[in-house]
Image (cartoon, rainbow, N blue to C red; front, side):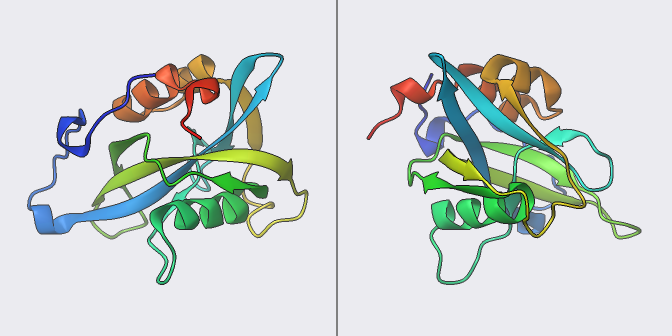
Length: 158
């Protein structure tokens, strides 16, 4: 797992103006099963493609706490978030007839302790565990794929 300083992050944002880029916080929800790191993926609400939970900053919460909040709402995760950012990825959010919104998502690891059957978006999403490398093959964003491909929970800092 390669760790980056913010100034070293491989990132490409194609927004017309930097002021049009929005920040989100993502949760890389994981467990270690039989010595292998597994990542919990969810489907997006509209296109049903595989993604990781993410959302907007929440006033009064740290980025990691915001990511954990999104993991609960979107995937029913009960767990522990680390304040260590694994990396950043960019994507374009499309929501209806509005013009596309360029986003940068910071990724925080969340160790999953339990999954709830009943959570706010349970009727809108599917969730599934994947080995980290297979999860990487399921996402559209190259930077997120790189983060997933190199993620190894056993190497996280305590």
